[in-house]
Amino acid sequence: MSNPWRDVYPLDFWNELVGRYRSGALGSSSATVGRWMRSVFKTGGVLPQQIERITSTLQDYHAVKKNDSQNFPRRINLLRSIYFDAAQYVDKYNINRAVITTPPAEDNFTSMDAYVWSIGKRALRKAAYIEEIQKFCDTEWGNPTEMLQYITDTRHNVDAFQHLQVGCRMEKLDPYNRSFEMHVKADGMIENFNTSPMVTAFGEWIGSIKDKDGNLGAINITTIDAPATPFFVWLEDHPLTVGGGRRHSWGYRDWGANDTKSVRYRDTLTDPGGKWWHWLCFGGGGALYELDLEGLSTTLFNTLDGEGKYTDAPFHTYAYVWTGSGELLAGRHNPDSVHHSSFTAGQKVRCAGMIAVNEAGKVTMVNSNSGHYHPTKQQLSLFVEWLNRRGVLSTEAEVRLGGSNEGVSVATFLRSPPASNASRSLPTVPQNNPAGPVAGPIRPGPKSI
Image (tube, rainbow, N blue to C red):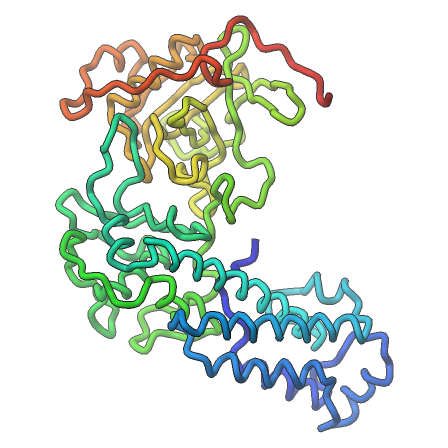
């Protein structure tokens, strides 16, 4: 999905394009030959009315103060006007759709037609984005104090489940779930603001970046005072959103519109569909199967095409989440698009980490390596016991705590005592859950009914 938060073209960039179009340096692919001839040979010729209106509307749009939510309705109307004129231009001049939908490179088009359609699409996406931010601001989280308290609250073990860690909750609140993982130490000190562009921008918002060299101040999350402007409103005038090659006045970094990406969340704005997550169940012979709910069928599951980050053993892994309701979900981990929070849209879990499954559907390695959840040893033990009772662990299976490269056997791990601060047991998995106990083997079903 294209980044909907990025703004339309800056006025100076658009005026440069129009100037090139007037002079014939930037032509048109239109089948209307007379208009193409004018664009090439008639310097200073009359522009199509749609381009004239887009230029005027763009000037009005950029004159509006962007980091003020009171101006959101006007900005939305101006953006929709730009889209309307761009669409009218394409229709009136019978523009070849192949020219404007398959550009050679972003913002490096060879015709004015493609730029007109590009600014139209940007305007429509941006208008929808502003609407979502307005909806967010109308919730309790639109209050900077409330939002800041939630994302920096060090308490997350409020029950037997594991909740998102401090420093990861902004990703859940964000209507577009942009990657956000702050490193927070046990004493509340924020360790590093350079983990992602959104986190760095957050550091600016709370005033932690102190000088023209971009040095970070010593900030404790328990002592942060909330700014007056909501974060996403403030971000509307930030280079991360505005883009266009702008730099910070103190030159800390060169921000661009593509510096950050949305993380896929199930059932939210950022889940564009496609098969990126797998619903696992237990089948005959003590193996893991993937359940296809559309075709009502099962296939043997493995992670052989997964991440191969463990150099001490030939493990190829997927991220897994054992959900609060007892589902077992897995998918290829990707720092840019799929986090452990993706599978449950940031909801609480029983356990999470990385899992390796061989071609026979047997688990060869499992750990609790999840930066978003940090499961306890007790929670990992419960998960390993759950898998062990269903016979899906291979005889050589290893269990690793956190992201350790040192593994132990299942028997050894289950014999070791849990940490003293994790003594509560998890609720029983519902018996009718597809990932719960299975009576007999699951037979492959028909592909369709």
